[in-house]
Length: 224
Image (tube, rainbow, N blue to C red; front, side):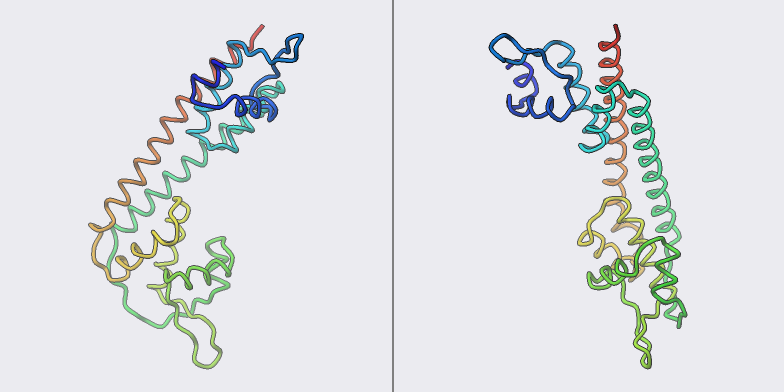
C-alpha cells in the first residue's frame, strides 16, 4: 500500500488509524478492499506531524474532531496544547531565574510542614514523600512528634524539583541537579540540562508549526 510505504508504516497501522477515526472512512471495492485517496494521504501527514508537536493522544483527539466535523473542538485542543507549551517555557524561565539567583541558604530552623507546603505548590503530600524517598529533599524530623520540618533550603529544593518535574524530567535526572544546588556549586553544572530543555521546547514549537501547516492542508482538502 503506497500510503503506508510512504511513511514507513504497516498496512495494519493504516487500518488501525482509520478504525480509530484518525483517518476518514475509506470506500470499499466490490471485494471489500479499502480504497485510500489523496485525502487520506493529507490526513495521515497531518496526524504524524501533529504527533511530533502535540503528542499521540492530543493528535488523535484533534484528528477525530476534524473527521467528525467538529473543527472548533480541534482548534480548541490545539490552543490548549500551545498554552501548555507557553507554560513550560515560563517554567524554564523560572528555573533559569532561580539558578541565576542561587546562593547558599543557611540551615535555620523552619516551621513549614508537609501539608501547608504541598498545598502551596498544588501537589499531594504523597508526592513530597516520594521525592524524599528519591533523595531529592531531606527534611528534618521533629524529635518529639516525628513530623517533617522543611527549612528554607528544603523549600528551595522542593520548588526546583517541582519546576523540573513540570519540565518533563524524571526523578533520577533531577536528583543530581538538586545535589548541585544543595551544595551551591554554581549554575555551570546545570547549563547543559537547561540547554537541552530549551532545545526540546524549541523542537516542540517547530513541530507544532509543521503540524498546523499539514492540518490546514487537510482541512482545505476536505472542503467541498
